Image 1 (cartoon, rainbow, N blue to C red):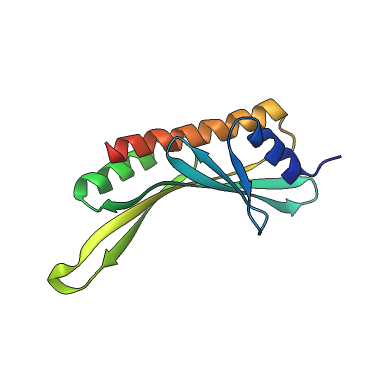
Image 2 (image 1 turned 30 degrees about the vertical axis):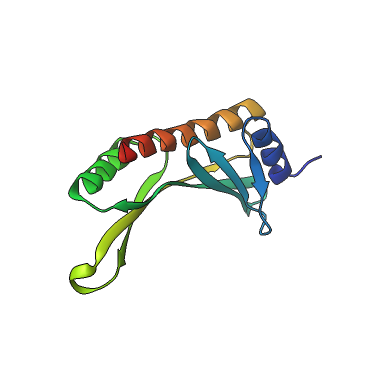
Length: 136
């Protein structure tokens, strides 16, 4: 019987390009975003899927971007949206940019194959929609 990690990799490979990382994480690419998925065993028969999707990186940090991320964070049905500020340079030449990530954790044990792959695709597609909004 395959492990939950093997099952997850097999299901994802049916619909997306999947790379297995040396640390056991799975990396998938979806609609100009990429995500890392990990399986964390919390307790016997409780495997948690931890999904982190990078939606945008090095966006110019403006009030409009901050407001859009805040609005999407309020409206999101899946996970937590995070804006990470970055400052490069110093003084008057300093510029602020931001990366935007979506994180979603859910118990995977007990979900059918169809339910598990559908849930992951829903989360990834929500992230891709947010990316399109932020980068348009």
